Image 1 (tube, rainbow, N blue to C red):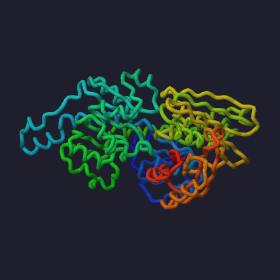
Image 2: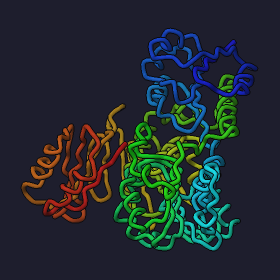
Image 3: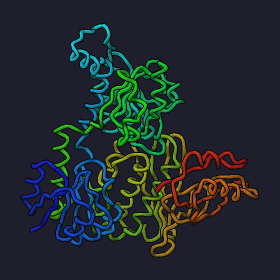
Image 4: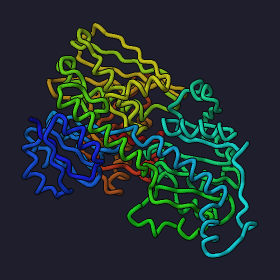
Length: 525
């Protein structure tokens, strides 16, 4: 009989479900060494956020078939190590969707009607009706940044409350947004001044970090009210506090913070009734906690019974017979898709995939899924091999596949968006040697790595030295570099630089100011 280990507090209903197919040991959260001692005898592991499932633990898990995370995030699990070991990692991406949406609406209403302050006043024996006069949301305009599942629920509730809704989401199609009854705003600069309320429903990425900052707050309608139940760091808290103190922003309602371990140091704390603050409660409902536990428990049962998981986030979720033929191309496919997505601008309309060599004779459906995952995960969280096709379809993204008679074993991804046309091509030049061989009009041959810097520039002497000088001054190590010439315009070249660490925006700005350099771009894989 299979054995399942649960190391964090998970609802008892989940334990009962798994007990139908396996022996379950429900133990307290333990450290790495202790878990390594016992994990070898188990077929499945269920955790929440407390247990850190490290590479060392995974390598010690000789019989492990599945790791279940009762929640959305899998930051506490080394997914790469699990994938290499052939272990399925599953989560529950939808279990707290309604909870997070409801909390957003609750925060908006509590802020509008001054409920926390009024409650405190009455409990102090006071009766200050005039002091707590609020505002109605009826006929006001709610601006939604990010129209995923949570944002869509918020949109529907807002409509029921009689609100107008405008949406900014560069990865959604205008017709899909407008079909939901909202107005699609293509340019973010046009978005800010339309909104009486702004709510955020997007992951924190390099594009969304500090999206609401001193400059963007100046563009908002005076007296706007801002809600964030998504991710900390999307709002510059100091800039928001300043805008509230100066009257540009009337109030805010915040559930997530830049530094949740030291939230007492947030400048929002001192704003009193103008800031409604809660301790990351978006998913904290009885129902959400039960939903995520049951979801993951059922997936564990499916896998231990020889069937497929529904929310697997890594390769073993794909059919083994299809995967076997193309598995050596999976990582390359996902990486070139990530690069293409990060270089693309605007709402994605079409993804064109062209394969050649032996791939032209194979079923490449696993590669299509890997490419969709790469394209979407560059700007969204929770994307996996199971939900990537569904999420792409929901955004109206059309995938077109073609096959070439060329002899090279290559994959080309072409993204057609509202504002750009991007081509990235990758190839295996030996059994395990992966290379990026084309970036738009540049023919290259560089290894895809976690941190890459692209520097388009005029083809003239001393350009490489100037860029390298900036990179070195910012204490960033270069591990590889290639300069490629534009095949259409000989006066233009591009540096493709592999570096050992993240390149901050400040470094990109310095490089972009070098005479002859176009806008530098950082690519994260």
